[in-house]
Structure formats: structure tokens, C-alpha cells
Length: 275
Picture (spheres, rainbow, N blue to C red):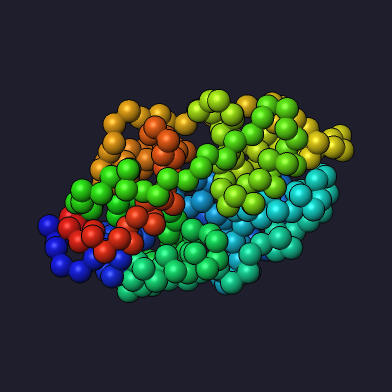
């Protein structure tokens, strides 16, 4: 066990010496239509890759995640967004690049500046690996600290009513800077991944649908959050979420996501670490 400087001051290589570059980037070529990347995001959102990287040959020119799909469906809630629009038309340009020597606190600074927990790392095979919030759970799992869920700042639950229109819900995601919104009086939620999955698989990319933003939320099947009944230490809740396909934990009035773990790891109190 290493105990000296805070975890936040350590480099990514120090924190994950063996597995840092294990998660390869999922890529799509410039020129592909948005329906193609939407189908990919259904599989990868909230996973170790989370966003899809747009390539122009060997150059990484941008990234697309749920944020870009949601932003653009508010502007163009029609089939035209998915057929006829190219990925480079809606991608976020200049993705965050990091190295083995990037300190954890500097990675977080970049993520907060961009409002996106995703970075690209050139790996040992001369290709590219993805660093996402879920990847950071590996760091959380190795920390030894008395900090627990109760030390994570409590944030108010953002909720929706079953009859609320999807346009209002998507706007609420941006206004409240959250990807998940709870169905009121329940532990069920919808998020960008679930909405994109419904659009692609059930609505056939909005074929014959002219009023998508006005459709009531109960058209979409929500998923159940993981409810727990014990106040877990940071390493324990990190391990739990790492094993979840779509990590989202609720303890009493505390809502915990991988991003919350990313933030708590900036604490100067966390110095004990298993390499």
C-alpha cells in the first residue's frame, strides 16, 4: 500500500500501472451518418468507452456521446438528424488528449472545463485508449479511506412526471447538468442512453414521427436504479458500480454516479492507495 501524496497528485500511470490503456477507443469514420453512431452509443454509453471517437484517417478529430445527440434532437427532432446528417456535423471537436504522466487532478480539470468525462490516451500499441468516468472507478476501488457515501455532497433528485413531454425532460437534463432523471415517487429513471435506444430500436430513427419532443415520457420504458441500505466506503461503492452495466446507486437521499466518485477522489484526505 502506498501512502504519501494525495491520489489527486498522482499520475494516471501511477494510479493504474497495468490497466490504464486496456479500454480501447471505439471509433467511427468521418462521413458516416448519425444513425450509425446512434446505434453504437446504445451499446457503449456508460461503459468504459462512453463516447465514440470520430476519425479522419488516423487523426482523431472529435467525439460524439449522448450529449451531442440530445442537443441536436432539440434543434432537429426529425429523421433528418439521423439520415443525411454526418457525424462531423454534430461532434465535439478537439477531444481531450492525456498521457501516462497526466496527473489525476489535471485530468479532472480538463473534464470539468469541457463538461464531459472522456479523454483519449495514446497507448503502448501505438493506438488509442479511452479514459472515462467508469474507468476512474478502478482508482476508487483501490483507495483506502474512511470517506463514504455520506461524505459525497448530497444533490437534489431531478424528477419527471409520466405525462411530461420528452422535450421538457431533455431540456431538464441540460439545465440540471445530469444524464439521469428519476420518475417521481420511484427509483426508476430515464437517461440519454435509454432515449437513444428507444429512438433507434422502437421509433426507427423517428420514421413517421413528427412530434417527438411532444411525446409523453411514459412512451419510454425506464430502468431501475440500484438501491442500497448501507453507507459504503468509497472503495466499496466504486467496486459495486464498476460491476454494474449502467452504474447508478441510491442510498437514502444520496444519489451516486461514477462522476461523484471522480470528484471525491480529488480529496486531499485520500492518500492510502493499493497499487
